[in-house]
Amino acid sequence: MGMWWEVCGRVWLFKNNVDTDQILPGYVMSVPREKLREYAMGGSEQPEFAKMVKPGDVIVAGENFGCGSSREQAPVALQEAGVSLVVARSFARIFRRNCINIGLPVLAADLLPCVRQGDEIRVDIRKGTIYIVKTGSLVYGNKLSASVLETLECGGLINKVRRQLGSGI
Image (tube, rainbow, N blue to C red; front, side, top):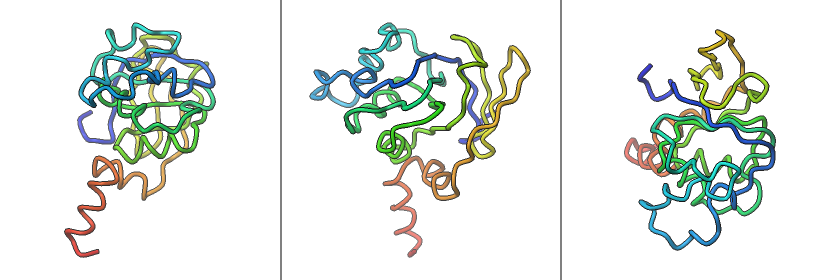
């Protein structure tokens, strides 16, 4: 582990339809970026998340993760909290795009039946494979497109555009 596409982290479980108000409550919108981490998942069924999350941890959720408001601060709060990856059965389209645009990897896979809170997983984002350490199981997620992988490799859309402009593309 160690390359940008390799993630090893502890699992935080969330259910279906986790909306952006659960990810980052609306009353926090005026808080400076560097303080958003303190409110991450503050409206969810695990309000202790912000105090207990460790860098590299992974969110695993069900369907429609990130639904509701399209506020881009929601994925920023997760990234600032140290979340290295969000794995969900499905994502709200704008939330997924906002994650990729800031360089926070997302992977569509049905992991809820396979893991428990606190389990360790190892993920190869390029291959879309998820190894569950406790059981030795391998789960396959939906592979990301070359364009999405390039955006993530650059650390987000702004960095990708800067790189393209710098190389004259």
